[in-house]
Image (cartoon, rainbow, N blue to C red; front, side, top):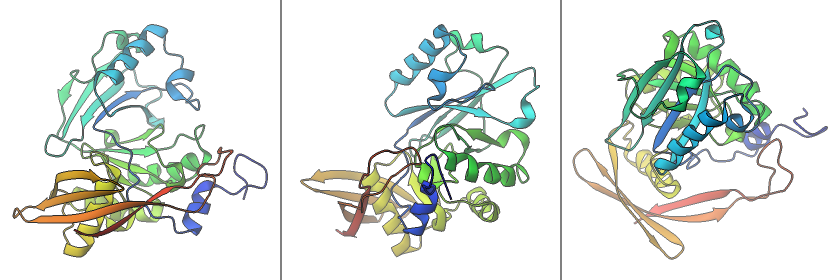
Length: 293
């Protein structure tokens, strides 16, 4: 089945067939800025958008203001005719998770709007499904059915389509805010199970990519600790420390009882592959090997 090049398979199919691990692949993000944009999403969504230069400048300044911040466009097909636009801001740092929701009338309002402080706090979780087909066709092919399945289960503004979240080859990709929890290879048939687990406060381990607030080595260690202990609660583990020592990383997680769980993580390179549907060069993805401390 062809992707962006004739005769070439979709990157998500290749990744799945090769059993590429999902573990430790969540993009490293602490802060999220989400803007409802109903225009076309180009490969680089902000650059290709019809937003004015002043709006783009303000958004980029907000991105630079805090480390590990990601700006995403969001949309819902059923809101194309709505007279108002929505924006959200989330923080995913563990123990400091927050989510705010704001309403604005015109894109030009974004010239001065500080998304991090606008609007009001929201107690409801937010679910994002990457459907950014211009960035990678796998995101649209696998993301749209996932969005539709979740939209059948959730209130109107709880789930949105979004631009690139990272890891095209793991589509369909789902991000749960404010915790910054990533799931990958979520199909329509998996949607309800993953959603129910999250709403009950549990990690759906079979599709779990990691938590955006953690560095990649810590994501790998967390997965190993959860599998060894059976701890599945979202807040049952807290990252205590990470320490780089040469070519390994020492990671310690702490459970709710205060017990430490140490792991040693080293990086290996997987086999060469075209990591996206648009990739022109072979690359070796990083994989993380975990052992007890």
